[in-house]
Amino acid sequence: MIDLESVTDTEQVKEEKFDANSYLNMELLRFTTAGSVDDGKSTLIGRLLYDSKSIFEDQYESIRATSEKHGDQYVNLALLTDGLKAEREQGITIDVAYRYFSTPKRKFIIADTPGHIQYTRNMVTGASTANLAIILIDARKGVIEQTRRHSIIASLLGIPHIAVCINKMDMVDYSQEVFDKIVEDYRIFATRLKTKDIHFIPVSALLGDNIVNRSEHMKWYEGVTLLYLLETIHIASDINHIDLRFPVQYVIRPFSDKFHDYRGYAGRLASGVIRPGDKITVLPSGFTSKVKQVELDGMILEEAFAPMSVTVLLEDDIDISRGDMLVRENNLPRQSQDIEAMVCWMSDKPLQINGKYALKHTTKDVRAVIKEIKYKLDINSLHRITENPSIGMNDIGRISLRTTKPLCCDAYTKNRDTGSFILIDEATNITVGACMVID
Image 1: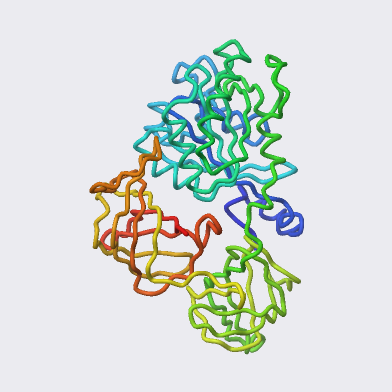
Image 2 (image 1 turned 180 degrees about the vertical axis):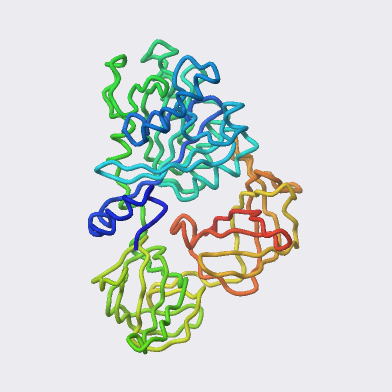
């Protein structure tokens, strides 16, 4: 099965189909950028794409012409990601912009997220699936409030790796003293974060220092470039390969003479490994069976592992439908209608106690009612506001809710897929809350 979101054109799709093994063996790294306004997030991504030769000549010519039209004295590589008219007019990022590129070592999906406080919800959206967060710091300003805010959000979202890029080093004469001071300040702050794998790189996104090629201006820096870090950072252990969680997305019944008795359960492995012969339990029914066969794009596999999308066939005919989950019989998730979670609120209408919302968890859809707001989090100090807390747009807080049917979930710290869900306004069908299940 080809993941279409990680390929960019028809020819590449053909190549991937031709060499499926090569595609499956190439790791995919998702990373997000975060930082304050004008820290150079879009420029850094543009430089990364340009220097790694991941853009077409006509794209470069287009942004060169646009840069001249705007009166810029250089080719503004930020235009590669700032696609909205309002973004180009103001020189800021408003919406999350996704870009895809690859090197011989890895494939990448980039989420360029906004720096403004009022777009915190956009950053949460872009960072929710990331393996790594690039936190940009303006070398002239050092660690500021937005640096702390975005780092705390990255930590709350369970992003396992952080690359702190101290940008605009060319504007402080490539000073090692400035770099060392910012690293020291950030390390002191980072003791409060859950993320422990933190890397520091001095860069100039505008001029390309230490992005793809090593800088000639910072001989004192002995570390790696940003691209080298992205290509080599270890992410295989970030995925939970212990707890089998297979949410059923679709039941395949061809109803043809050739596949008369075929009944396959298609979905994406949220975590764990599944093999033929494994004993499994179907939730919420509790029925048990054995795995008969695991298929991928017509191929029979000896095993499948997260995050592969596969079809599973069982030895027994069991009533299984979308929203059910296959797990190991001796390794069950928590099943409960009463859930406590951290929520990032995305609507201009505040969260309502006793409010009713649609809830989507993996492939399961239920309804939920908000029972209580435990506290609101001061995202800058991590202080808990418990006196009459209200949760409005871009706020993060802890809530308790009750669902109409039990959810098969894990703590978010254990499994980001089965430990997260979204709340939807039933009247408008707009996603209003992104939630992370608490132990």
